[in-house]
Amino acid sequence: MTTHTNLRRPVYLAATITAGITFLSACGDSAVSPEQFHELREVAQACPADENPVYTQLRIDESGSARSANLAGTPRTVVEEYLTYTAACGGRFSLVAFSAGAADTAPILEETITRVGATRNSHLRNAVPELVETSMEAIDAAYPQVAEELDVSTDVVAQFRGGQEFLAQARAASPEAEANIVLVTDGLNTQGSGRVPAEATVEEALELADNIDVPDLSGANLRIVGIGQVASGENPSTAHIEALTAFYQLMGERTGADEVLVVTEHQGLR
Image 1 (tube, rainbow, N blue to C red):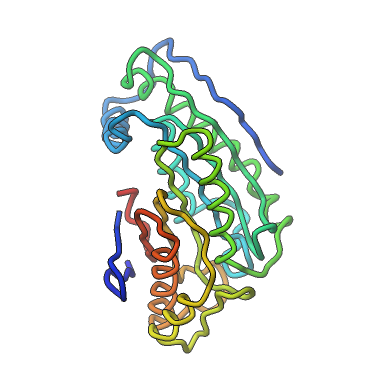
Image 2 (image 1 turned 30 degrees about the vertical axis):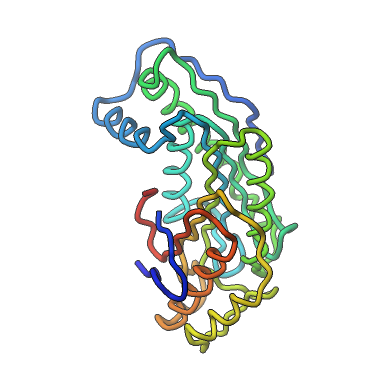
């Protein structure tokens, strides 16, 4: 895992299918094994203590170097984990693919998840597994069309604005909601203001990040996952990955997000 923890400022670690409001039956016998139920309870322990909802948006890079015909590998793991977490807590889950800019996106899944059942345990046992399974099936059905709709160019920086729009929606719907904005990307911009040259040093990447306008993401948790993990083409050098990581870390901090984490390897939600 590649991560910078103290570059210049403190770092805090931490086709469209619209499902609408999802009501799942909490009746009937549970098909969840004791081991699965234990895992779901562990996930739910991270839910907001005051039972406020969780709003999560994942924006997945589907540009040329990151393009994949199916959701697999690190992107799939990240989607499944955040979907399970949001379903366990209740709230809203959004999955969007992106490439060349703020407008060059393809919404894949939008779901509002209402906790059902007399207790959280009944919700976890009876509702969450079905929701995750049906949602992943819907995503898999829609995903092959995504690459055909998007440009091959990349503008990761523009996705910060998309995250700001989602954050505004979350605040309007539930001011106290936990908000998670997750970008899954190799970090290689080919257009826009965030192009970090392959030969750039960490210092040069930081200077670039310090001179780009960023949106206000205060109150959100921002995570950027997969830096340097290309699906095609030449793998970036270690030095380039370090410069990219530094660039996005500082960009994230400048948004005012409550927590910022930029990594190459996904290590779980917490």
